[in-house]
Image (cartoon, rainbow, N blue to C red; front, side):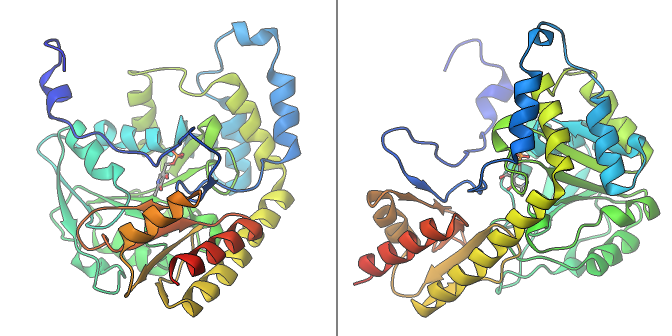
Length: 352
Ligand SMILES: Cc1ncc(COP(=O)(O)O)c(C=O)c1O
């Protein structure tokens, strides 16, 4: 605490990211990183970009990256916005689209950054409760809301909605901006990107952190109608013109070029996820049907906290959220087959 803290600094409750401990080497299954390295093309691009041009500011418009994304997703370059991780893109949505007097909505159990941003930007929010089986009651989102943040697949449950179900919401609430956070969409769900052209109240946000193995380089993006993209640009250029550095821009372009590697590693993670889910169920765990690179699990006989602590002692980090409704659950990132086998063996030992 300092006597110079503003009211905001005093009052906010910051987001708590998953641990990145340095005390020993852990099997890290706690922050939904990808267990595989980026494509070799990404390394080549980083090496090529690492030269004296670093003394120059990066392209503030990330022109090359936006044009690569627009070609990849078959949308106009003016329908793409890029930012420093999708967290930054999500944060920019608040001042870009919502006023202090507006109310927005998201699920009671979802990405925990949404309420942090809402409080930070002074935007009022309401939550819609997931059903008891953690599925999403889309019909419960009220009409009188200016915006909805919807993670699809949802986090930390991993449960995904169909494009048609979300499109029905977009059509039911034409005066509400629906922001679909597709951080995990590449692990088995379907993206809304292809229908962004049809709806001016739909914005899709994605990231290079998960399915493209680049969490450390911080690249996220949004795709939507040109007016929405222009709004995000106005906010970015009033805050920091150079949110993406030169190396990150080049690396992201290279990652998009290696589609085969992207597809292969996503398929591998899906396969590992399904194998792990089966083994966990054999150990008596409840496992929610996941379309993400993590599983959400709980056990009737052992508390979430107990398993979390036991695994940590054994050198495996998973994520436990001490929050109502999910206190007894654990979110486990999908690692390599070898890491998941070690997890299963350690769980068997703990449960003896
Ligand atoms: C649902 C969801 N959205 C967005 C993000 C942010 O990802 P990044 O800022 O790395 O793009 C995360 C990160 O864990 C997430 O779980």
